[in-house]
Length: 467
Ligand code: SF4
Image (cartoon, rainbow, N blue to C red; front, side, top):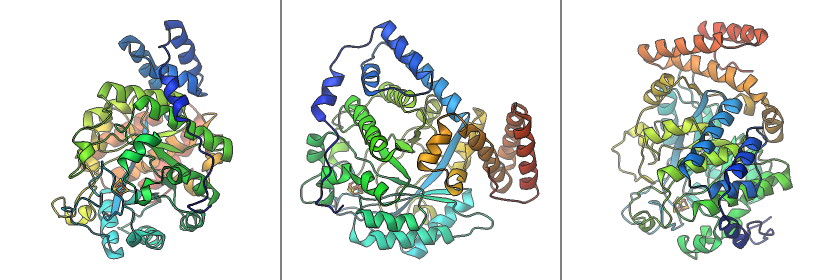
């Protein structure tokens, strides 16, 4: 499909706004919905709309507790870690909420050379990262040829025994044939945020005359990605651009559209909120601010509505917010992130501008150390992708809960590697103790035996082992 062939739109704006206008659920209606959620089969759009109308603190607490149960049941106590690499801040678009916008004349711009990308990746590998998100603005300078080379460059970097095991990509929408090229380069998830699903507001925030002004082309990007062979896709909106209740219903509509057409919904949904950004007028007065309490509620609602979809939280959020949300739904986080190109290898003070302000400035080790305190297992696992358990295969495994049999052990293996290769003595001691505790809790004898054997191999120098 080229840029001018439009698919039938699947977001019905008026219908979705109509759904959020109905009345809040009664206590018994809420219980019925939450009881259904606790069967781990998700919720339909009407049920989600009903939950979004809840404002009573006691009822919100019930939703948060249901989300905690769903999160524990499906994901256990593991959190997947990744780091973004900004390969460039040049952008032809002019989005009113972003510092990379073309009208921001004070931003010093660059597109990293392959050598500079190598340096960025090497710096992250030295910290222990293994999963990278390559991300950039939209410009001819970082088109598909550039990205393919950047992917090959990133996979080729070695830092001792460590190397990147999975690359996800967040770049502007492409035609089908370009997605086929990215697929051949072995990308993991293709991520693209709609920013807002409200077509009227979208038009206000994305000035005409730029590629991004085309709402429909962006809305249909995952259809083209899937036609191009990409198995894993990641949705997202930028919360603060429209009524969050509308955005959540639209996200669900989008997920259902993909399931209906391709038999597989999104692998992940990201939850960024608008943050201050230089010369980005919308960030000075956010049109539809989402309070911390509402933000927690919506993550909990998505957790119980789409229980098998990963929820990603970035370092836009503060340490306190991130820590609280691990319990209620978040399954993937970035850590030690920088959003200005070249910042990992050249240090935080170098002068290419960043996309937005960060809320969590801690290093990877500091984040890992704090989650050990909460008895969460950091995971750098890439096993499913490399064993071909992606797309429908992943969902088939995830839905009966079997994913815990793979994800939990694989998380422990990658955590052990991290502790042995990168952690300070103090973090290492506490982490190894946590692994011992977790292993002693494994009920299934055969699983415990297999895990113990792999952990022994890791202790004797083997790396990159996974089920
Ligand atoms: S949000 Fe993306 S497309 Fe828009 S100006 Fe920023 S980098 Fe460019």
